[in-house]
Image: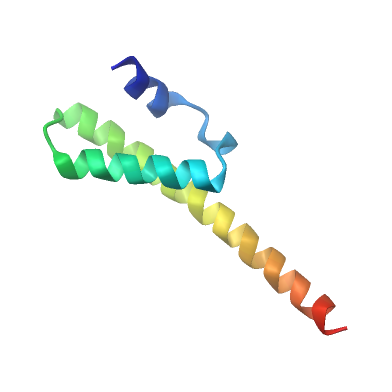
Length: 75
């Protein structure tokens, strides 16, 4: 249970894309499995939302880098 609380409160901004994606997959599995209290389910959902936002920021950043490199590749 201590690990669960640690995962919920860990500063997510420091996670790599791969770490955030893996933890998000774990959160989804736990929510789909059920068997948690309403409070725990809500905490997992909120954590999942934060993790999804982190993944999206990483993907947006990668897209920007690719778009910025395209004109340079054509030169």
